[in-house]
Amino acid sequence: MLAFMRHGETDWNRAQRLQGGSDIPLNSTGRQQAVDAAHLMRDEDPGWDLVVTSPLSRARETGRIVAQELGIELGPMYQGLVERSFGSNEGESIAEISPEGYQKLLEVAEPEDQVVERALEVLHEVHGQFPERNILLVAHGALIRFTVAHLQNTEPKRVANAEVVPVDQDLLAATAS
Image (tube, rainbow, N blue to C red):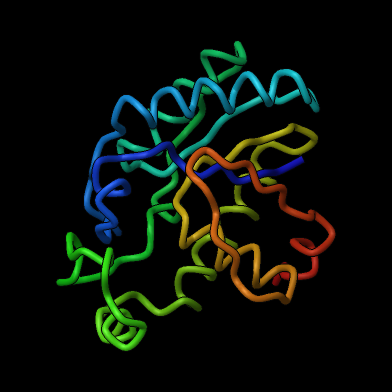
């Protein structure tokens, strides 16, 4: 089994600021979300074996907490799991922005198809490196929502902090080159 998990909350999440590749740490709520998610995962245990993460500290710390709570290995970091870049607009508030204003902010953002392409590369790499293991990939909201929507051929859906989203391995196999 492969599943994504979004990192826990940061102060920028709470303030509704675009984080992207900015390395913003978890806040105390985010740390507790990681603990709570790990407890839920343990209760619904498919036998998790390994946690891998984005190199950004909010994802790495979430992964470390989850691995520790589950008593499993914290594995490598993958650059391809970093959040979508929002370019010069990282740090901008989207709290009270119009849809048109939001679209304008996204003009300098990394294109969705590039985010999906690098996420799929990591999924294939992880699946190949760790066959027959149940792997949790701790990453970021936009990357998860775009990648899962691509695999399922659906519209992207919001992913909550510390939410676990399974990856359909049959759909992933269909994207192998």
